[in-house]
Image (cartoon, rainbow over all chains, first blue to last red; front, side):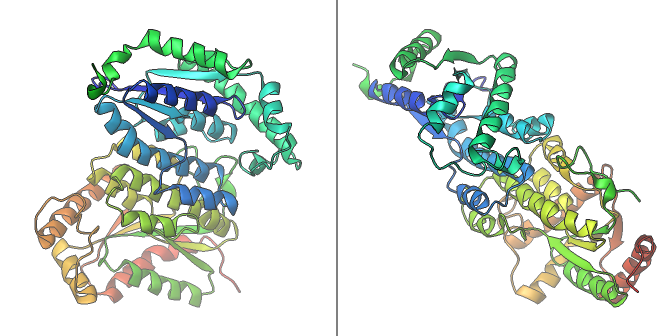
Length: 225
Length: 233
């Protein structure tokens, strides 16, 4: 719980193809241009850990359990060195994916739900979680129409759903989506319809933030007239 | 003896079909752990048992990067603990379990208890770390080589001329000088291990004695365990 911490933690979650990263990027841009103290953090980006994850994926060394722990390790490093200190220092921390990404993916891989939640129990509770909700078919269409090169784990190939990587991706994403929908209630996600255009969604997202928080508290001092 | 996990274990894995034996030797650096393991291995292989060794920071997945991360001043105790947990899980799934399935005797040069003890010594939540290791298999036997910190220090000096940074708990920084830090830290670790005995079953072995005498005691204790599985003809 970020109780007593002056910062705010805003999370953007959603399926691959939900436009989550686009929305997070636009939010960051908006807040930075507005002169607010904002720190942006992405899933799976700790310099101390990300090489293991990368190699583990490339060489297909990861099992559901090690996949889960290595992502928690990455998160712990970013959380302790960046997210938590920034929240203490009164920043708006904007996270492109947070622990819910792990909860969803690990549960689909059969890792015990309570075990995963314990693994991440050091994480602060976000002040606001946007879930960019798109019907599964739209998210899949956005991603798969160009027949991109999909990655092994991203497509859930380790689960043995299907030997066709596109088919495997569809099945895997379908399960991940179900997990998100279950969590939306449990964790009180703010669900945003993301099947329309990015600029409309961005308007909605910004309006929610402005309504929820007194942003003037997060202005850099030297920008205050 | 049927194998079990401490908690729910590894997804999709049934432990009851694992036939080999898992024997753990715990103890600080200088406790004679490696010497005892190599003596045990010789003894077992002479009798025709197939053995395999696992230990901390030996996983294919993270060993190299974990060593690099350890050199970094920004690695926190929590991140390090998780890193080690990953190192353990990788060996559990890729070495321990397949070896046990193939009827091997797995000799573990330390196991989850060292990782739990280190985490607790660094003020991390005990329940948090113990629950992470719900994935671990319960060994057939765990021996803790208990050696007085002063003796550990002396043995370390004889071998390496210098105390190890981590084994001296220098990252915890209890004392200004390294020797005192080592003694304080090792004493604390031993207390934590004693407490852990309440949750996990270890056999305490007096490691202050000569290697041959310790080896004989281990052999006497391990013999009945392995006799449950048939050696090669």
